[in-house]
Length: 166
Image (cartoon, rainbow, N blue to C red; front, side, top):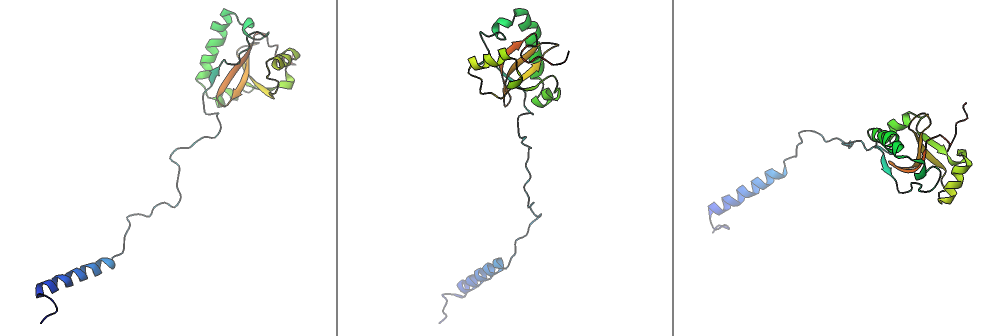
């Protein structure tokens, strides 16, 4: 008697064993070798010079000599607002390229009235302020934090940090 119930069953077992054996001898293939170094899909700039400014009025001086009392309606609509709108179309990097016009100024270089006002506003811990030159004498002073500009003072007569040039 055969160990197998039938020759057909033995033949099926043999075919299964051969097909399994053939599969184990196969080696995988690749169409192309993957890159060993990953490349970023977008450059993430460091810093904020690629961003446009955002205006904040939360610390605008309401009572000081360079605050609300220094701004007339004419200044607000004809001098300040159009310049701010223009700066909104620029990045901080572009704004700071005009270094002689828009730049940071050390607090120690400000006039005594301005430094005393910073003390009264509890902002005397600042090392520097940023200023925008809007026209010949007109300046807008504030604090730059990342891409936010916190507007502090309107200086229509260039008194906050007068130039030593005459």
